[in-house]
Structures are given as C-alpha cells and as structure tokens.
Length: 108
Image 1 (tube, rainbow, N blue to C red):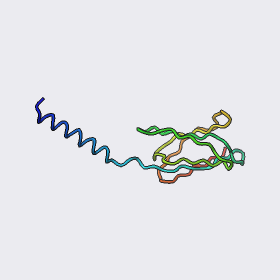
Image 2: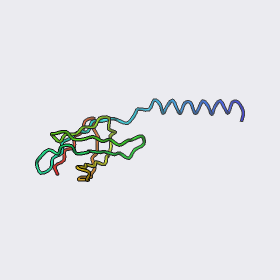
Image 3: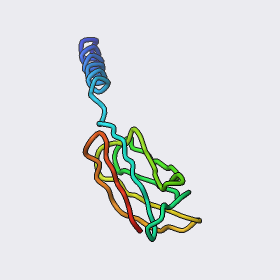
C-alpha cells in the first residue's frame, strides 16, 4: 500500500473517530415514582429498570418508607420495569421515558 493511501486511510479513520467523539450522547432523564399495595406505601421493594440500547445499563434501587423510588441519568426510550418484594417478583411492565423528568407511579 502506498504512503498516500495509508495517509488517506489514517486521516479518514481519525476523522470518523473525531465525529463519533463529538456526537451528542443520548438524553438523560430522571425517573421517579411511588409504589403502593392495597393503598399502603410499599417500603423496601427492589425496583429495577432495563433498557435495550447500545451502551445502556441496568438501574436498581429500593423504595423508601413512603414507597418512593428515584433513578437519575436514565436514557430516554422504553424501559422494562421489574418490582420485587421479599425475593418475589410482584410486577413487570414497561415505561417509556421521553422527557427530562418522568414519573411512574404504581398501585398494586
């Protein structure tokens, strides 16, 4: 391969990497809510959310005494929500986060 071809190839690769580095990241949001069961706050429930997107991750938290949970830096888009209490799954569903601050309350 000639030097000019190597140079063009290297320059192209550097330009592509620079464009990827400057691309804006997916919007991040806050997702919060309250969970109740039979009209009472569900304390110490494990709330997990998952998103199926490149670079995404699993978020896990525990509800407080008022049944409230909160996640920060959540990617916008659809998420699977799983709620567990005392080692048992009690809810699985979906929430679609499309704003910077979303709320998902659940009455079981």
